[in-house]
Length: 353
Image 1 (spheres, rainbow, N blue to C red):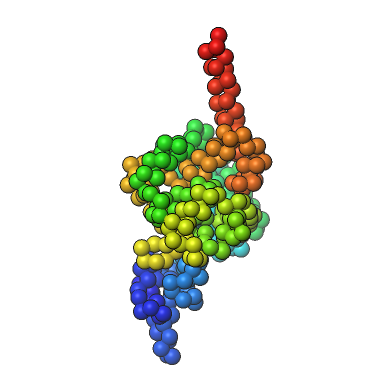
Image 2: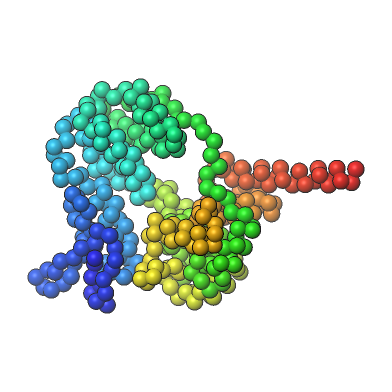
């Protein structure tokens, strides 16, 4: 637990520890099992502290374990350790680093000591097919290996790439459930205007932000009748800046929640900013309280995109709101809306006939 020197309160964050230097100053660190500790210099309880905390968690995850020296050069585990320490890996967003590392570390549990030069495409296919019951996870494994060997070839750590020719599994998935108007109203009935849950949904709904974006929004992002923020996804590689009108319903929700002066509108019960994962979990709790266990934060983004398409917005207009960079994703919404309108028109003709 970290100590907040300004308030003498404990900060309930996982892996946070403290010590006191010879001048009596309290120093906070992130110390994960078997990894080097990482110093947090910002004052606990501030947004800067949470930013450093998240970065420290990622840095600790990237740091080679203490038994790294035992990894034999040329082994799969050794290659993974080299990749985690590379500039290419560190340039990735935290969420990308995390899922890549989970996938690669899972492979290393069984195959870490094996010579990476012996890995062939058939081995990758075998590992992929072993996860056939969960095709999304199987494809993520292949994607993580491709990233690893793409870096390894460029860095001249290896000369072969066993992922070449390995295809992803084909499967049908509609992704996150798209909220219906009825489900949104049901959520509103359970979480009325002025509640934190209602504000959370309105932030998602009227900014089309992801779960990483909503907990970062605050007064500095809503000025002069507009909402301006940089999307968290790919912000370090390919940043996307959003600049959209402040919807009256969102303005009313912010005012009712009495958070218009906050640097982050959404705070935990401890008065601290949410992490992306923490917000996602909390939002799922609010959904369950509204008897909507199948709904999620990302489904709101899809619902607003659908509503824009049904209102007649063009793909480029939708992209300006959502921050999508290709037409392919957005055209799904507009095509579906077009089919719906065409079907309605056709049925009206049948009724007149």
